[in-house]
Length: 320
Image (cartoon, rainbow, N blue to C red; front, side, top):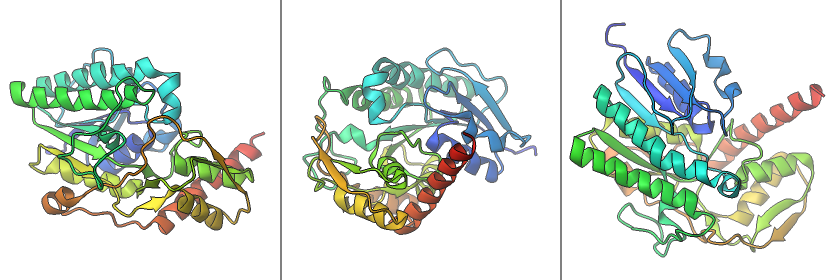
């Protein structure tokens, strides 16, 4: 098609990037997926390889990027995001937030493409304002273990706005709140994949702290819808995309046990340093500017995710 748009997705073989790539193909785009598989998996996009509109490139975005041909849109979603990665690969996290974002912006500038970066609710740190709105500047510990991720994303927002103001690059910033769904790594280390993996294995569910800290969790399809709406909008300020329904960690654990039909006990371990006590997005801007709000309830989303985890466990067992 003469007017067919072409999009680049960095981190396209990751959890969110693969869902985004799939949705863009469904919307009629040609998609170039770039990933170095440091935390992504080729299995996440293997089902897309048969499409003539999908191209996979194994590349580290912290190195210079050159994509032959025109590009209309750049979705910069490359970054390890698991708390487990903060200690294991801290330098890579900082580099992808700094050098990777710099390279993605340089490519967008060269191609005249619109660019959206995946930022995070972690830019708010352990918040002193609740719920968190986009004007809140955060409470971040730059030298703590989580600082490598928090500050990488804060820097990514800063350089994005610098390119927007100085070079006139057409940019968007999405601040993503806790997201879950099929293809999230079972060993991701975050609450929902942890709980589901433990419940299906019949082992105790690990709760850090007393379980009274709160989280707001959104299903991946809702996030992708918000990202696409933001990309097509004229909004250049950061926009929170998350589900404002707030649960305690203990409530999420109990829901997972019920939906898995598991009688695993709950065990408590110390709360990690700088772990946020409360997390809930103020989505007023997303509602007013994008006409967006989440549609998938926790029960529905958790059931779908549990089914995906169970299928993966069954395949692994059959392959032994």
